[in-house]
Length: 186
Image (cartoon, rainbow, N blue to C red; front, side, top):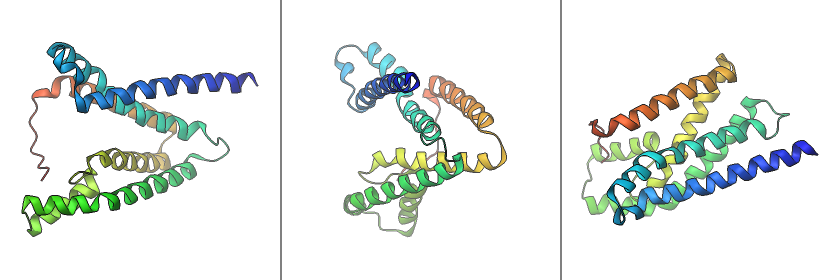
């Protein structure tokens, strides 16, 4: 009974942080502090808000492990990958008319352009007007990576690897503002 109450309190804290992170994600896209202070805007949305999405990924991993402890990790991973993949497919179909519309307004009807769109759908998770799907796509790839790693190494080592990757991401985010990439979106 005490463990259940403590766990519910932990979930309430996670829910509160998820709620705050949802506002930060909205803020990333709307930039409401820009009118107040350029410095405050940069501090909040280039530094603090960058941790909202990784927090959502971490929550997915946490609940994947703590929910249904009687099931093994690989079973839970397989179920979760299929579930998120199905959601990704459904929403991609919903966005398909807008994607086709985007292709037409761009005027690009070449094979190369079609290949870029397919690449973006599979590897990036977005096309015209479906940019929000990158999160699901990234989550699918992350869970597949965890599934592959879990065949070879322990969950503790996977968490250690993930923590190092997260720290590298923080450094790249902090110092990577001036890094130019050759990634061609469309």
